[in-house]
Image (cartoon, rainbow, N blue to C red; front, side, top):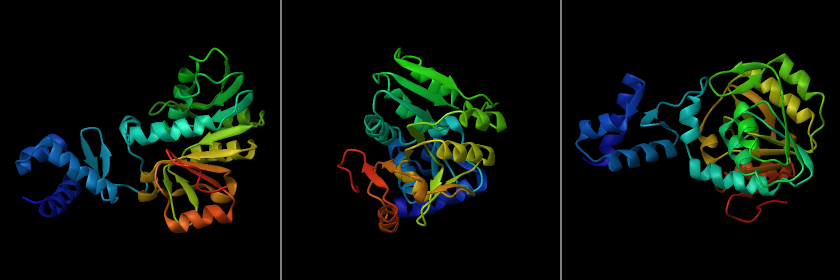
Length: 259
């Protein structure tokens, strides 16, 4: 059975059951796990499914996929993006790292930075940076979101307003061609807006899959950013908007696209 036949049926099963698994699909079609993984990767590449551990789910414009599933998605791309972003953060500076698996990847590549004041509302970031003895860590208080270790709410925003950061590293759930940076959680968006207000330089880290997703709440626009770190060449419309707003674009593994 060819993939042109399997793909529509995989989507139909996902609509019926809410999720598909590699094991069940391999048994259903009588093909190898590797074949199904390629099918799911192809469907995810075109935005028709979102990969999760062991399978895939239908994409949602109002609900994010689970944190552990997000952590494992596009791990190689996130690592390359994180390395490029961390290299752009100097020693002897103050930096804010926000909620998200991409910002956590950046933190994991800052263990050799010297004389850093790091503020975060991400408990996972704090745990990663604890391994750097030359990094002072401040955790912004707030309501703990157990699903991903994020801290949100009024207490978090009040804490952030006490600082003026040299650099802030933020992530997002989705991006659109109009240049909007999007997310799902309104409380998290309020915190991110405060981070943007309190930072001299804003760095966005997001892999290519964010262009295939939708989310309902606008966090920021390209006019708020100073640099964007990603893993693939950008859609032409988005790239033009970056140029219009003087946003430096860095494609991991390539030279800077825009200055």
